[in-house]
Length: 110
Length: 496
Image (cartoon, rainbow over all chains, first blue to last red):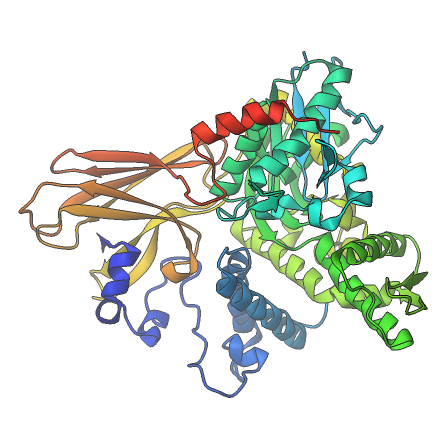
């Protein structure tokens, strides 16, 4: 059912605009791994984002969905926190902080 | 000659253990009489000597002292410059290992082969650097073993337990969570999850900040103005942290190095726990991640085992007991059990089934024939938690007509978005001209017992193939020739 075409990241970067689906399309793509379906953070604006916004948590989101979203984000950014790229690491630390704040807000402190 | 030797090359402390003739492991003290050696190296300016351990930690010039080098073992560009010479992380680690080898061999005989422990989430480069460090110190690495696995081996050996064990290993610099199944003498790792840069030294830094704030509030001055004094205060802070694991309140008196006066620091355990609460929540999330990876619930775990000095913090124990609804027990001496387990592992490794600690794959455009959707993604070939050693193959297609060079990225990580995984290597294969797109290419990844990965690319039509072990380039990565040269040099050094 799946056809897989090799792409190197250098190649894909050069044709990324044409090849890669838009973030919205990515979010709705079929779930093929436990990490599929991570909701992308809202488009960047100049206004500072709340931890909920950073984590893509919406006001009416059920608790189970919030927990799933936080788990997915934690897995992603925990990995980023050990990146050798300082930018990735800083972003990951910012996200991990937001994830913990959101978790405490919705599920209480440990 | 000591046959079964294990070394815990820790972020803050290192230890060596051997398996006694009666089959029980024992820590071997260094020549300073210490069971564990601080992982600190001091480069003396006036004498040609490298100090390792307590002497290096307590007295040296910070500009000539190297702390926590383990945190940089995965950085190909990291170098420490001392007296115009660049030292790689593996060379610094080799000095620590050389002290252990030289001094412990006086007690247990020659040490030629060792098992060395590493954090479960140490990446390819960090593992390779660890093996190189041992080589430079004059030892062959029989196996690398993950720290929580070693601790669990020791726990199972001493307690005779069966069933599913979750090991929560919170050390000086890293957190590892491992779930394993023990059946008699056989141990099967189910999953290992790790968080780098999350450990006791992060707690020390938070406490240091609290000290500095209290000092500034009382005196109006800064607590330290240089690295030497900051290190001294940090040592006092670490002592206070340890006291807070035993007492509910601790008082301390500190001064800066500018004669700004004394300040009385008053610390309550609750305040400290509040300071580190967010970090502890992160550790709980890692435990939950491990349970999810093993497709288990908290109630499926039979034993929760604590490893690493930071698990002495009472909040850690109560937090885990609340999560699991059962006692969390210490693995004997939490600082020593990893080295002790490594010595046991040296003998029992055949009965221990480990797993891949990360997913390995490549970057591919994946078309779903059913939905018509296409997506650039990290296509996993070896999924995390596959029992090792292992080898897996996936077949891909070429993307362009007349494609002459096939490029295969080697990815490490579980995220399906290629932006969130590490590209740890790239393999290129030249293929014949004038072929249409869609030619089949088999990509095989192999993963060995030391958790090192190899990649093989086979163009099915032409039969051409290329295989590589993942290798790294960078100022801090030594070539084989340079490794030999520096090994010879290190053997001539005076290390105390």
